[in-house]
Length: 178
Image 1 (tube, rainbow, N blue to C red):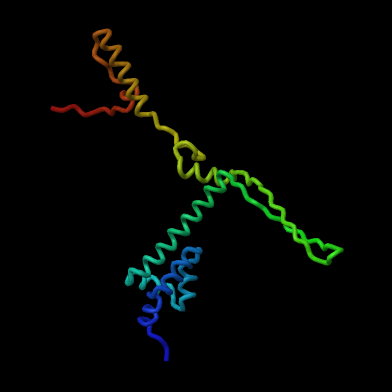
Image 2 (cartoon, rainbow, N blue to C red):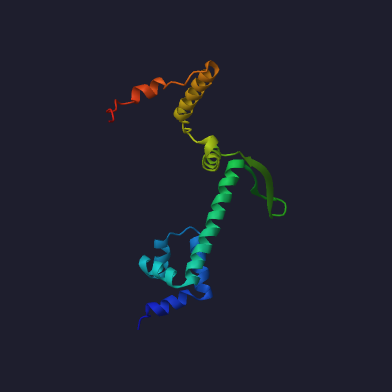
C-alpha cells in the first residue's frame, strides 16, 4: 500500500526531512532536483512550500546560506587569498625497511581575479564602473542657460527679453482672435 501525499508531506516536515531540504538547497540543487529527490513533482513541492511554512522556511534558509557562500567565494576571488599546499613523499629506509613519509607545506598566493573584480564593481558601483556610462542629457540645462543669459543681458540694457531663436522657430502661426 502506497503513502498518501499528505503522509509524504508529513514525513518531509520532520526534523530530518527539513534538514535534507535545507541542505539540498544550500548545496545549490534546483527545485526540479529537490522534488525528484523527494519523489514528488515540482508543482507538489511549490504547493507544499506555500501550504507548510516549515518546508518554505527550510528551502529559503538553505538558499540564503548558499548565496552567502557564493558571495564570499566571489569576494575572496576578487581580493586574492593565500593557500597552504602540502606535498607528501614516501621513501624507503633501506637499513630498516620502513617507509618514511615526509610532508612539505608551502604557502602560495592566489592573485585577485580580474573578472570577479569587474563583476563586483559593475554591480555595486554602477555609477562609476558600468561599461557604457549613461550620457547626461544637458539639453534642458543648455536652454535654461541661454534664457538666463538673455535675461541678464536684457536687464543690463533695460530691454525686454526676446524669444530665443529656438523658441521662434518652434512657434506656429496662431490664428487671430476676435
